[in-house]
Every structure is written in structure tokens, then in C-alpha cells.
Amino acid sequence: MFKVKYGDDYLTDYVKFTKIERGVASENTLTTEENSSDGVEIVNVKRGPKEIPMSFHVIDGLDVNFVRRKLAQILSSTANKRLNFSDEPNYYYNAILTGKLEYTDDGFEADGSFTLFVSDGAAHRTDMVTLNSTNSGGSSGTITKNADGSVRIKVINNGTKPAYPRIDITNNQENGYLSLAHVSGGFAMGKIAEADGKNVQKSEQLYDSNTDSSFSKFKDATGTANPQNSGLGTNGTISFQSDGLRFATQGTMSGSQFAGGGMKVMTLPADSNGHVGAVNFYSHFNLFAWAGAMGQTGILQILFTDINDKLVAGYGITKSDMSGNSAKCSFWVGGNTPKEYTSFGFETNNAEKNQKYPNNMFNSSTGDADFLKEGASLGFYWYGSRKTIYVPELADVEVSKVYLYLGQFKGSNKFINNLSIRQVNLTKNNVSVWKDVPNRYAANSKITVNMNGKDTVVINGMPAIQEKIRGTEPFSIPPGRSTLKILQSTWNTTPPIVQISYKERNL
Image (cartoon, rainbow, N blue to C red; front, side, top):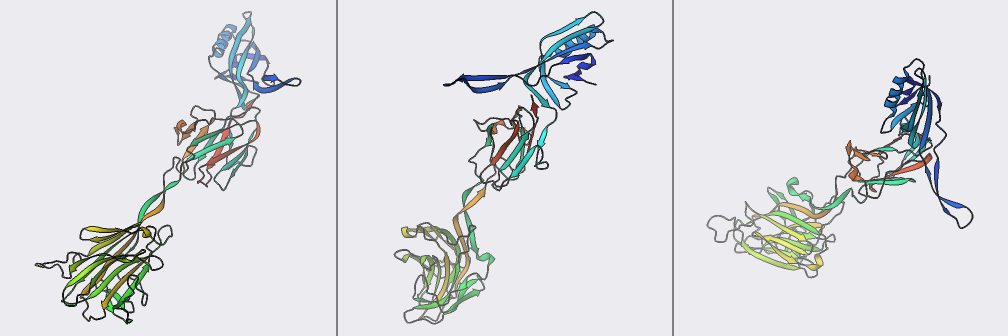
């Protein structure tokens, strides 16, 4: 049985329609302009609204007065209502009464007519057409995910009028920008320049003897020239003894050498970027210098060189006094003119009570000192402050190796009882590290762009129209086949999950 529903009411419960003129299509309105030759040029084509005239006869047996009032109630709407015909079960029109409701009766039978106005001139599907990864390749189109993170959608609109899609996007990776490009227009949201992260400067510890108590990562450099002074022989040995690295054997010396001992070396471990060497470098160390008797002697050095073993800087203790208890702490620098930058004298006691000149730098309970390189600035710790020298030619030179030396003077047979490197820590400063920053669209966030809705943009269920980039607007999908391309932030190469849905419309 043929039925006509308007809003929530079935008109066919009251009348039998004798004529309904749905027509083929709404009228075109053409905008033209004069041609230089014959005829005119069509500038624009606009599809007009549609009218559906309907004639009826009141169903026999019904009270014609009741029907008259009922039809007036149903049709007297100030807003569009859905108009459905049972022979088009999947379509509806948005319609409203236009003109007069004609109604003629003789008290027993009645006939009449009215016209419904369809402002958009289209019949809308009652169900949504949905295209996603499950039905991709079928009658609604194809979704293709690309290696650059973009998605290409070949969509098929089987209606005869443009459709306004809803695009649902689930981000598989953090993202900062979305562009929906179509021949009908473009819509964009977010920030195209938003980065996935940024470079930050941080310090990275490269070595700590607290986790290598025997200094095993320092390797013997027997026979290698001492980077600070070739007069220091290196054919002897040093080894870990009780509290740190100490002198073991003097070894042979050439005629031009005035002292001999052992030396170890370590090439700096690579930083987190895989780079070896540090323009900006810091080393903390703990040294012990306490003579058990007058006239004991010895040499201790911590030397910092470039990758070619050329001295950058050095920190050392020298006791050459073969009769007394005097020693000095020396700071060496390399560059165009290698030299001893400065030195400070001290007594090699253990800071015992009643000492006239207590050794408050290198006794058994203290010993902390350090070296800092900041470009061309070289700083050496001494008694609560850092003594700094500026060496321009070393500004870009990287510390790449660290040498440890302990030796004894050729003419002395009394080695200082306690001369020890107890701790070494090596740190690279200002390492450029890539830091991820949270992006505006998190992984697994769900974005809906509705081209025909009040809330054009919804993120995780919340309206977010502020995300729309100014100058971009919603667009429609024309009848037939067309292509929609979804672009993300350039650094995001993981395509999102996409679903497009729309109601087909027909003339």
C-alpha cells in the first residue's frame, strides 16, 4: 500500500493521493554574459528549489471536517519536515507547505490539493554511505595509504547532487596538522609549521670511575710520548692500588728524559649522537698527595688532548723537592704556544693539626678538583675558585682523549707515599639532543570533520572549530568519482585510520 509520511504523521492515514508530481529535476538558473561572437557565455549554473504538487481525496468513511483540521495541523509547519514516499524507502525530502491548502467538501466527501516546497531541490538518502578500510575497493570507492603518511581516497558519489561528507580520522601517531584537499575545495586544521620536537642542549656523562673502580677503561700507553712534556718517560707502569691509580714502576728513560713512570689513556666514549669529542667539556677528579717523609718526590698528571694527542689542557701535581715537603699544583694549556698557565705551591702534609701550612686541597679526606672547557675558556679549580685563561685558537678544538700519568724523578729514589688519582669523572656539555614535544593531536586521538554540521570540527568528542585554519572552508563531493587527499605534518609518515561517510542526494 502506497504511503506518504510528513514529519511524524502519515498523510495516507487520512487521504488517498490522486496525483503527485515529483518531477524529474529542479530548474536550472543560468547566469550569462555577452560573447564577442554570437550567443552568450554561461558564467554560472545554479540549481533551483523544487515543488511537489499533490492532489488527494479524503478516505471514504472519515469525517471530512476532522480531516480538514488534521491536515491543517500537520501541514501548518514553520520549518522543514521530512517527506517520505513508500516507493522511495531510502530517500526523503526536506519540505514545507507553500501556497494555499485547497480543500472542497460536500459534508460527506472531500477533495483537495497542496504543494510542498523543497528548498534544496534534492531527495536525501535515509542511510549513510560509508567508506572505510573494510569495504575499500567496492562500490563506494577506494582508500590508499601512502608511505609519506598521506591518504588518497577515490570516492564514488552515486547520487545526482553534491554530498556533504563527514570524515573521521584516528591518528596513529602524534600529529600537528591536517589538510583535506579536494577539487571542490580545501579544509585545513592545526599548524602546518608545528614540529615533532626540538633540539635542546644537555650534559652527558661519558665516564665515571665510581662504576669502573679499577679504571679498567683506561688502557696502558706504554712508550707513548707524554702529551705535556716528552721529558717524562712512559716505559713504566701504573696500577690500581687500594684507593686509586698509583705509581708502580719507573721504567727505562732516555738520556734526555728527567723522569719516568706509567701512563694510561682513554678515548672519550661517543655521545648520544654517536660523536666522539667535546668542545665543551667538564672533568671532576679527586687527587691525593701526602708525603710520609721529607724529600719524597713524584709527578701526577691528568691531561686532556685532541684526537691527535695534541695537548688541550692539563692538571698536575709535582713534588721535586728532595729535602723538604714543598710541592706545586700546575695548570697547563695547549694551543699555538703550549705552556704552564700558572701554578700554586703547597705542603704535602695531611692537614694535621698544628700544621703551619695545612694541605687543604689534596689530603686524605678532601682532594676534589676539576677542569672546565667552554669553547676557548679553560678553567682550573684551586681553593674554592676556578682559575681561567682564554685561548682563542682552542675555541673549536675538541677534547677527545684523557691521559693519566704517575712518575718519579730520575735522581730520586724516595717516591711520595701517597700520590693517587682516586676518582675521575668525564662529562660532555652542550650536547645537541632532539627532544620530542607533545603535538596538538595525540596518537589515537579521534578527529571528525563534518562538512555539513554545526560542529565542523570535533576532537575526542569535544567541539574544536578553533582548530580550523582561517581561509579554508567545508566542501562537498560532486556526483560521480572524485579524489580526496588527506595530508599530515610532513614529519609524520604513519597514515591515519580514515572513514568517510555521507548521504547521497538526488534531484
